Image 1 (cartoon, rainbow, N blue to C red):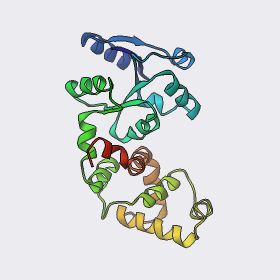
Image 2 (cartoon, rainbow, N blue to C red):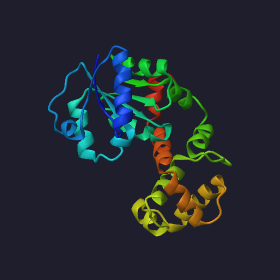
Image 3 (cartoon, rainbow, N blue to C red):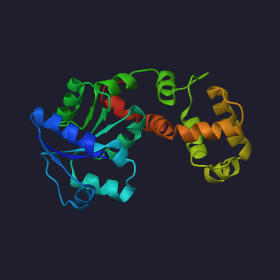
Image 4 (cartoon, helix red, strand yellow):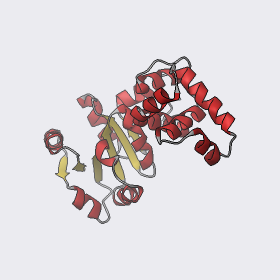
Length: 226
């Protein structure tokens, strides 16, 4: 299997490249410029992409990736898993950054003939209850699990929107938005809008991933996980 590797850190990228070569893979470390200028790819190629790099690309660049490579695997933290869901039109994989060697290799090889491939620690996380998933990613105890609507409210807060603006965008009364926001603060055990704003901003990756898990629950039914 041939791998094209792009990593935000030259040192980590070189170390990962050496590891993969020692495992029998053909690896080419490519630059950002060469990566974005590539033409059509090959079915035998796998793009191994660092999540921190993928996170700063715009939608047109991500679309170009999906046209260029049929198989794409992302290495990142659990809270960055929302990036995986942006690649579902392709054969896509996600590898947790602290994954053991056996699980890492299994996920890479799993892209050969499979639509999706997730590393063992990701699969273990997905099998947890919703509240345990949320507490783990948010690193915060909850009074009760957050609903999809409440996570959407947190995303709006994370992006700096006030209640009036959210109400206009959602075409809902401002009192409805106040109630949703109040429920979020109650479940998070937070006092005051300032603390909620700060919390949501600091947990933006986790919020995006939890929301993506809600929106793509059918994917895990395909994998016979839920």
